[in-house]
Image (cartoon, rainbow, N blue to C red):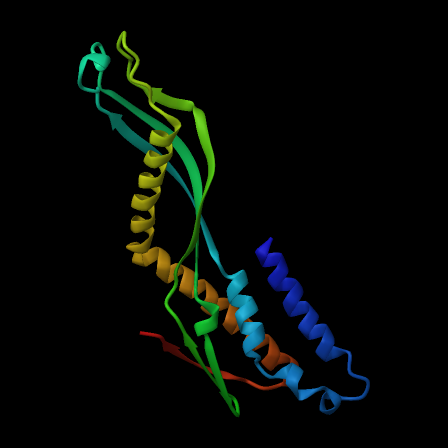
Length: 197
């Protein structure tokens, strides 16, 4: 879907530039120069979506005192799927065009959002209860999923290969956009990359 949006965007830019009446000199030069707004739109489309399968686990200790006689310590786990979106902060993307040189400062990719997509209730497993119920409440389950999500977030943030892949994806789309503009205006742009610290 995102690739289709990018292709439509590039085709629209080429059609706009090809529709001049007389010659390339009549084409609005603004349409043929790299534009920071377009770059930011491209970076938004370049967001990498990573789907994951995770397991939330927890233990509920047996209570103490007379009211808790016969309770057992209980453990449970539940499987779920989610999605992490990784991309670059578009507001930090910078561009400077000098003649045929386009200098782009690109920030490092980072996780943008996380979402639990589906909790598989058929894969819910809990240890047996005692004769005095030690219920695993909805709050305990929610807390377990929250803790599993935090561990998964940390894993994504530390995955330098995944973050580099998201940044490279944005770079390739930006390069393609600038190359297409250059083709439409017979200008060979040179891209100079700078990386935000």
